[in-house]
Length: 159
Image 1: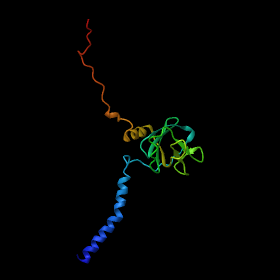
Image 2: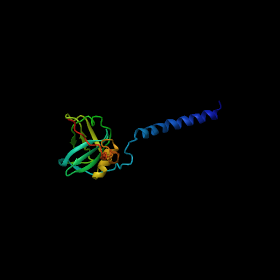
Image 3: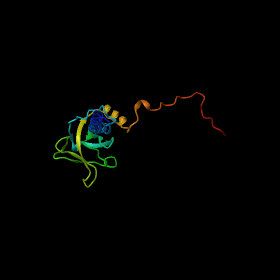
Image 4: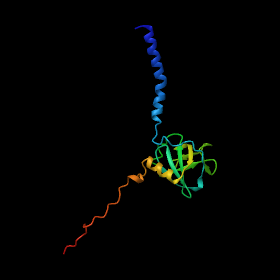
């Protein structure tokens, strides 16, 4: 083989070795909610938190009173999130924010924590859309319609 061919092959190998991990990282970061805005910087008063729904290992909905949903994205996947039956908060004040080191706690000992990347207040329609998007609720249009009444299909009593 000539030196030019070997040099070209080395350049191709170098190029692939640099950019292949970047392409794989983008493929791993694929999320079913790609079109969501993850840049929320809202805060939640911890005293008003009433309920939560786990969407996946990195996203959840938190409801504060009176029925104010918040979309919360964690900075890294929390494997204990799906199996937890309650969550706690780790904050320096009475507000849960995506800055200042605030985190969610998923076990009673406080070992399983996840820092918050973003919190965004959303409306009820967006909360329903997220529940459908992450498979936690059936879409409203996909529900089976009620059967139409059929004439002549009455029940006849037997002696």
